[in-house]
Image 1: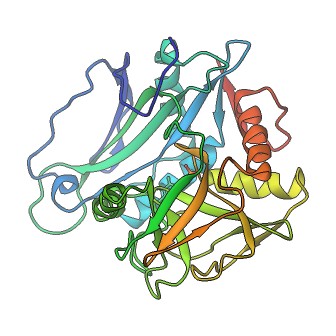
Image 2: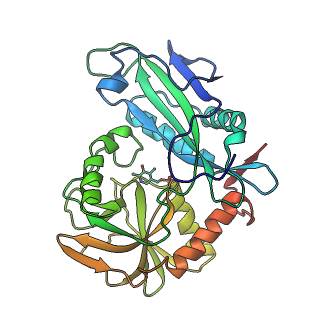
Length: 333
Ligand SMILES: *Cc1c(COP(=O)(O)O)cnc(C)c1O
């Protein structure tokens, strides 16, 4: 595979499909076609019974392939399924489906040294005909992969703007990875982009005074007294990237990690800020605009020194050039 640019879909050799029917999982299979048919009355189409995951496969220098914290994705997938009344796929079965799909599409892994990866998108949908409101009685677990380059591509810090819209309700489904959260919030992203910003900053849905998430990513800031500060709230999706960064910030950079409120009108103590997640890795944030006023971080011309170090440590572990003392990596070949 050649170098890949951007975050677009490229059809690969195969997609993994596994059906849950009559109360049990049938065996999974790899299929060539990236299209399939379902009932017009599938609850996934009408009532949003859908959840997904996002992770990546990394081609190492020695030609083997690394997966990063895949059991954490498997467990988060289970919580999303539970919340949407879908069957919980056993962790081992999730891992097996992902491994099979990656190995079948190994040719599509971008070369080592290009920072490209194979993006992996597992999902589950409620299928089978059902008109009344309620859970489906048949489900499909699907794994799709696509080679990707950098998500945003621009290494320069992005400008973000707050939204009057929320991505989730205070005790809604913000803490699980479901398509419905996106259906209602891409509108906010569209507005932000039209106004010339690269992403939207969501505030806490209850009071609109605290930072929650940056589009489809978590938020963190580094304070002038060298603390890694990230918000905590029941409507934030617990990012696996953020979890890894908290560990690396503490262990490798000696930063104190604080999870708590970050008020939108009190950011003077933060010198560098970033969005973090699997798709966009660590994307520095240069400024935040809220109600017409713009707050610019000290490190707004280029990625801040702590974020740069975190990025090197994280990608080093992911691609296998830095040893992984945490058991985060699963190597397959
Ligand atoms: C997937 C996602 C993230 C990032 O989580 P990772 O596990 O780091 O990929 C953050 N916020 C939202 C809303 C997400 O859907």
